[in-house]
Image (cartoon, rainbow, N blue to C red; front, side, top):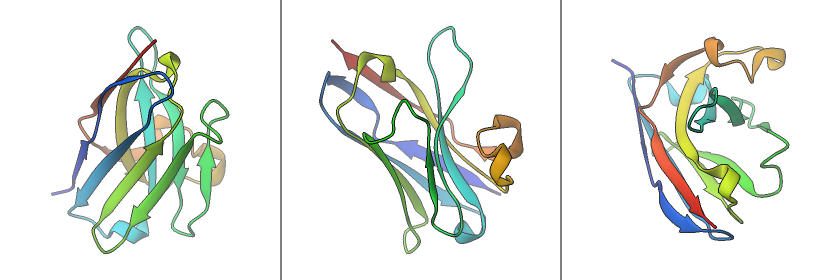
Length: 124
């Protein structure tokens, strides 16, 4: 059974940092693209960042230069380091795994398994 479990969310002030974790079990961690998505209240889920098996990283323009995705193969854990947080970053953040082609890397329906999400709230 595949499980993705996020942690690390919380309430922070503008400009502060958070690191999210996603522990993965039940699949070969290195064989899949891993991604972070987020969903703000009243909005659709949106792509944040992804890392492919090759190690290549992809970011939405809204987080480029502030967020960093990484994976620790020894711990089967995906991370999202978020720096210089802004109020518009407030959302539920979820990790996901799948095998999207590059052109579909931002497409939620391509991803197979998802975590339950962790809330990030940035206070102005």
